[in-house]
Length: 72
Image 1 (tube, rainbow, N blue to C red):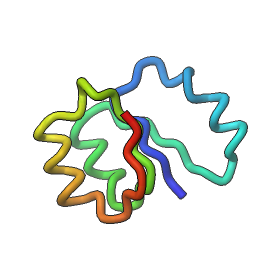
Image 2: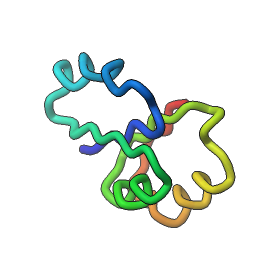
Image 3: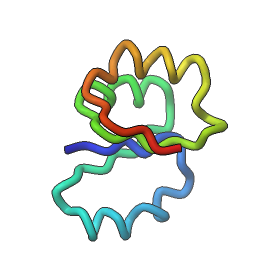
Image 4: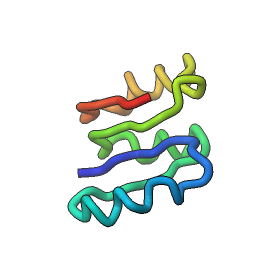
């Protein structure tokens, strides 16, 4: 399972989750291009509500076919 933690700085806030859930691959895309690369295999998307805009929504619709949960 993959979780994309998009546009978060610093990523350190999620390092404890990596330890608690070693079965989940956490990735940290910081650009739309990086997010587009990660979305096809992503099941969980964590993103700030202010960062979820029309460009991100379009990427999620087009590339995020496996997303099961969006946390904002």
